[in-house]
Image (cartoon, rainbow, N blue to C red):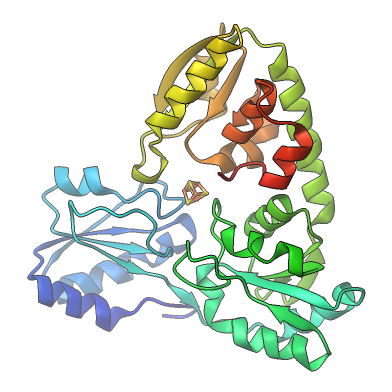
Length: 333
Ligand code: SF4
């Protein structure tokens, strides 16, 4: 199939090895158009294929409950590397590495990196195989290139939507970051986690651009949300239901902190936190989100009430300052 490596042979082998009779296919939105073709591959291996049509934003969201309910004996999760350890239903991860080349996009980034000599290189799981090529291009122009490996991710240089440990581990050694991949999502996470200039080399558009203005815009929104939340009397504390977003202990701690600061706090649970979810609770003034931290940052403008990350709530409660939180990161522990 064009564009991504779906490792069809490995999928067939795993089905045969496990003797799987019913297979659930789960993938993020961008890969769903390929689902019918992938289902055919499963069927050719002698198993029934069921495509999960629900949204899937990350490896935090393995469809274990759905699989158990449907008597599925193998989940094939596409587009992400393993994040959650679970044994209930055998699961294989097909990372769907992109086949696009990155040379042109990385070359486009050179003028934007002209003032920096030490560059941190990072990417999402789809483009990990291109990091060496990107490093070579940068090194050829005299740059020192560092790729972080903090040991929390599956691969050196890899970032996910909520884990920037690899870039944070080298932030003090580099002057700027180059992210290889499409869209602003991951690069924004790098800029917000490290406070370093961050350039995107987008191989789909063969162009490079800075994420600086967007990061500043988000920081201003976050500062305003924290200020507004300081005047809130009632807080809703969200606990996620997706396997990698279920942090009940953290939520209970946030409730205690709120009450210690003279605020009322209520625990809420949801699979998806949306602007509509909040409309159902008009008496609640502000929220703390212990589920997916990117909901707070990326959908900030859509919510009518502040929806803070855990680290931001620490600032509201006087447990941290804005400056210290920025050093730690808006949303990482
Ligand atoms: S918690 Fe959010 S950012 Fe992290 S993997 Fe899940 S969807 Fe992505």
